[in-house]
Image (cartoon, rainbow over all chains, first blue to last red):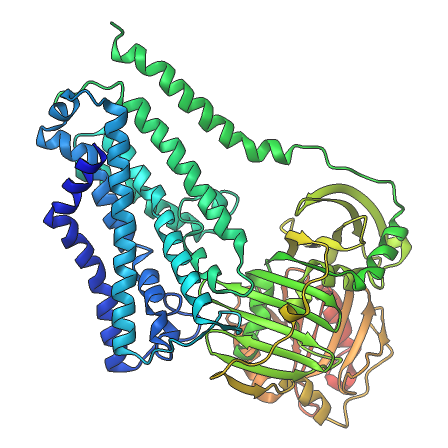
Length: 269
Length: 369
């Protein structure tokens, strides 16, 4: 069932169209940077963007930072929100459930497909970012400078980049879990997607308010930018581990809720 | 056959119990009893003052509630006392440590060695060397709970000290100590310091002004490890391609030094005795003790004009024949601009009434008794 869901997802043109659109923004930003030679002022703009003019090898990280706040979670919410509600809207859900595999297995298969989409999307953004960065900017493949001003060997830079890509993928799991849960509540993929985006926007807004600081550690977007911490020296694991644990809690709770709802609801479409 | 509603109830109950358990977890951990110890306040203060050799590394957060009315030149100082500052620290000794101020997109690291400091700014790819000076503007390392706690307790008398309840901070049971200043001129209600009993290291410092129940400054460790950090972590060498420069002294200090014929300052202002400070230019007068301090300093004309404009935009500023003044929490500031002496600033942790009283005791600066 998992293989079927994966094939279905990655054979859809709209899946690749979503990924392509997601890559358009970092490419546009890179082109504008090259044409104008105007990087963001120090301390402003997405992480690593001010550094790419001197080292294009950092552009995968800048590209992830560009899409991370909005475009990437929107893409994940669209795909995850469509996973169950899309079948219901198309009238194919009851046929899927007619198979002896069971609802829990279908839910797991949908979840795995969404996770695969998240991973593929993040890797493609990073790969396109590397290609664009090393093509348009001066790259320093032999070594790099950490955020803390120490030198990193090429091996250290590569390992930390891979870890950062993995962390960004993990950060998207909470959005995926929200959208998947909402997808089991409604027959409207748009409604499920919007529900996840409302959570995302609310979390991002609350994070900026001092009055919300007591609940800030529990907001799903709180630790998204902690991938920068892989490039501090020594690596700052504090927010990274908290971010992974927080996403794990959201995924666990929301999947349990999705399971409780989906395995007991009346399927009429 | 069970109806969907009946089948759903136990499953939702499992989910509900799991969510309730997770939601209650922080409160349960916070409610765990904290160990206390009947150490006398004076003894605890002595342990704090002896802790500057304690080695540690950790993660600290400082939250300031002071909207200081300053000019563009002092923005970084104002940010320290009005914003949330996240810091990583590795402390091998007072002459060998590193403090990184973290931001979402980068960091600024201060590496201290025996001859001075290196400041690394990632976003500007700049490394700046500065010699150690006895008088310098406040910097992030000054806001570390350990550094600030030692400084604020350094001149406290036994009569000003009381014990308060313990707290668990960064996983350590910390003993509470309160300093309540004796001076009537003080704008500080009290300073609370929580101390690790084994090492004497201050783990949290809270400063409360007289006019608000919201802390003017709250700095605490969130993570702390009492071990010797590696020397390679605190040392620094500018990376290839970095812009390397040398820091100048603050203009306000230079200006005070240039005015070699300062106005005569009295031995006491607003009931606070004058004190000396190594390295302070003769143009600066420093008064008070402990957490009640008042400084009288000449400022450049351009800085005074900017400050006057900034104060004029603040609805809380008071202007009358005594001068222009404002209070930001427990910090008061007054601008004097007598015709023949050049502009002067009076500032410190004193009340506005104390500033007016001090200004009146400065006839050479236009004060009227």
